[in-house]
Length: 352
Ligand SMILES: [Zn+2]
Image (tube, rainbow, N blue to C red; front, top):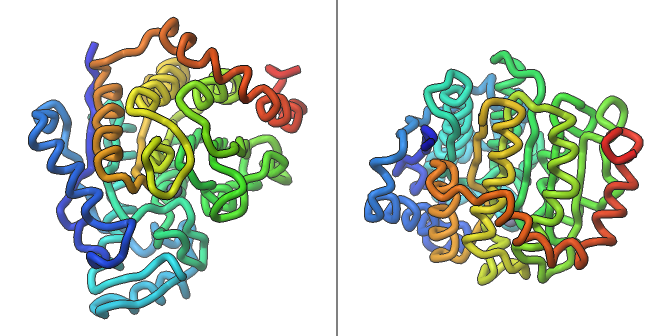
């Protein structure tokens, strides 16, 4: 059966940055939006109008002084927030629109208007900290979307899966001592931003609810599936989230200029399927993905398309196909899987 898949898409997202602000440029979304028009996919998808996040929503995570500082960049030709992150005239509004897009996607999925949704927004968010922009990120879209669901809607437990090449330091910090959110990140390590060791498992009440899978460059479809099959699935099934959110970064694509990973379009579809299977088991399929990185424009576009086909349930990969895809990775990633499981074993009876 096909699913009702929503997308957040708005040409205002193209108004952040200049042509010189490589690699996180408007060309990324422009290419995705063009694909949606030309492939006929648009007709199958439900449009979710974004909105500007309210200050009180930004303040669910960010410090007031930081929000004010970013607001102060509005109308200015260029401001530098961090060595990687700059703003142009409209960036403050666009960044608020990214957060509001994710919040609206959460709402449409929670009300059942959509079974799942993909927020095709920019700037990305997972590196942003309460008082600091970082790594092309201004406001932390996924963190605020999750806090919005937890505090303003009837959601108690959220699983965040972050498959971006880079560790989502901002997301980890947001929920490091919070057992309402299980944060699961697979990333290249060591790499930007430097965090994300397997030993970072959360603290206080959040111990065991922060799971990092640090990988050496070179991991491909089989490696990612081996890890999701042996670590993510057992933990997620035990956690039983009410909602799943995904930091979908496509810089693990095999030709991405920033990364050394080897994931293909089919790999992204398979990862999506694994997460959809968890969502189907735990929370009637409720899943909200948001775009993070991905800098090979053609690869990004094709991979987003593969993810959307999967979300629509048009190309369901069977369990047998997934098992087949992960086989080579089990052996290659054996030691990291073991190490991660040892660290979190005290908190997850499934590993005992
Ligand atoms: Zn990234």
